[in-house]
Length: 115
Image (cartoon, rainbow, N blue to C red):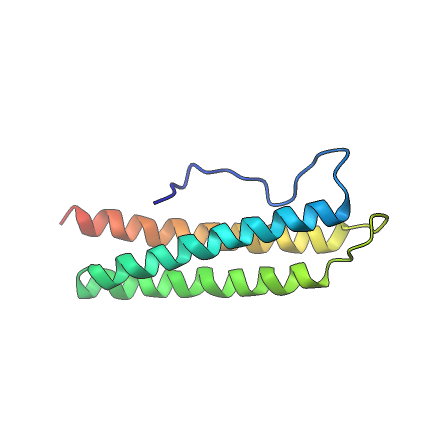
């Protein structure tokens, strides 16, 4: 399982990165988060009932943020000269929300494993 110490930047700050390259990286980032969320759901299936409910609840929040980020990514212009400004800010917030929900679900799993 990936840990909450993974600190990937939502939008790369590379000076030579084109908008298309940035969007490809963001798509890859979202694919990684999708896999993490799926892994949480598997762990929820293996957990006790109380833990499973809490994990599923947080995983649902993460999944909603994932879907919103994926939708936001589709709105980003693909031409190299485009300004990503507000779209980038919104995407970063959604990834932060997803990360927070994921971390909360992961904490529930850790607490449940300690019982």
